[in-house]
Image (cartoon, rainbow, N blue to C red):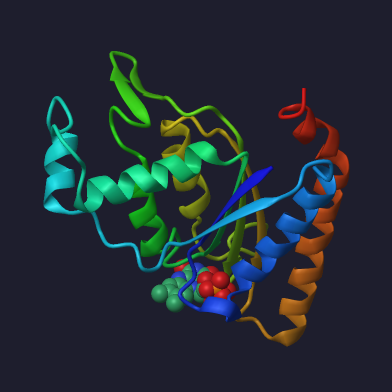
Length: 213
Ligand SMILES: Cc1cc2nc3c(=O)[nH]c(=O)nc-3n(C[C@H](O)[C@H](O)[C@H](O)COP(=O)(O)O)c2cc1C
């Protein structure tokens, strides 16, 4: 199985969302143990914003002729890695109630007219084959449940953006309250890990059946 992991935290190895994503990778390895794992890692942080040629191309009726360069080439590579993956794991912090700018830059590169979606009278239609996407989110405060005191634009935004290109099977796990003290963090980690373990124990057959005929 091929797994694409996209890491979006600027905190490198210290990242809480990266830590959480490891449990998802472990769960996938258990659920799909018959196949070896090919892990493709992309760090979204060095991705540049899209450039002028890219913006022109997306606003034009056709892509430019010839070899792609700049953001168009970057976009080609990022889209290909998405196409090649059986599973996608996105490790991301919440920044200002939504996705961090690094993840937004990746989205701008992969949500691309004529390549990953088409425009019809009924709206945008995704062209990628749907596949499981697991999102590991970490946040300083709480954004779900009765005690949440902040909005969550990350979850609905990511769902809408990836549905545009055909990816609708999103499953979210979160460690919330990383800024609320050591005890709260440890409890949130344990809760998230238990949720991930329960999910992969239950979903193993469904996941694997989708890929192993
Ligand atoms: C620029 C920035 C904005 C942030 N905005 C939020 C926010 O809106 N809500 C929240 O709960 N935490 C916010 N945080 C805290 C992070 O979500 C939190 O530290 C998280 O655990 C970081 O995950 P990471 O270790 O994977 O980067 C913000 C952190 C930064 C650096």
